[in-house]
Length: 328
Image (cartoon, rainbow, N blue to C red; front, side):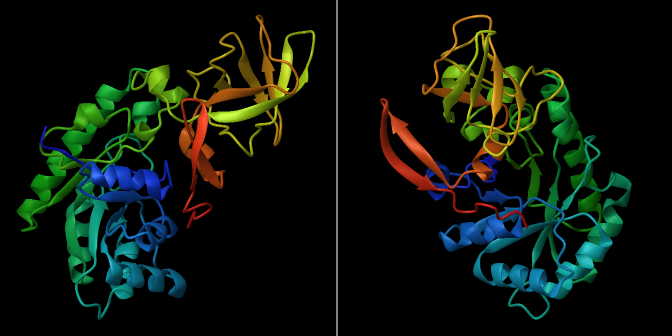
């Protein structure tokens, strides 16, 4: 389609997987935090976009942004005048202007400026010494229902098209018009969008199965859990509570995970170290190790120190989570 992939690395947080994405021809890499971008830079990745309204108004954060900017081709998300001024100060005197992409809201109503405020912010960025590389948006409302992805993808395209026209009218040629999420990527991957930022696609999870972007056989991330209790009423407990798996549960999804080997079972509730499960069918025995398919894989990886690579039922490698806990 002529649209690049700028995958969101907050999903895998793993250099071995990101290397495979780079080798497959991505146009760059996306991070959620300064810390994630720093971890990527430490491992030699040098085309980085922090797709977040970054605040660089403290001395420590300003220094970290400046150091990253000097090391790699860095683009930073911005959506406020205050943030633009702080980013400009952080890069003052650098060898080249710091590049920013302006976040515009396409209907999710989280962060991002309204289109009517885009020009004022773009001009503020330029006055602050920043290079306006383009604009980005996130159709997170593609998760509001199982069939919401196509409309949210259309919203991404419509918003970025309008943003590009507004920027060009100010003499800014947008080299970057970035959209993306796993449910919307295939719907918004068309002009004028230059690249997509899906993250979850690399593994898949239960949410993606529900919205139709993955089948069970496509999912490559499972949580190995051990049954620690089993009761006659169809209740059993595994050792993967909220400190292991995500507590994310959209209204259109029942429970917190599923077990491919025990399809009748559902994860009814989570404590810190317990997942209480119910089944009307066969149930696993105490001590049995079972694979759990989590609702949301991104959170699971962020809670882990390493990923265990398995092929043909054998452990073949262990990959470190390089930005474990790098949430700022």
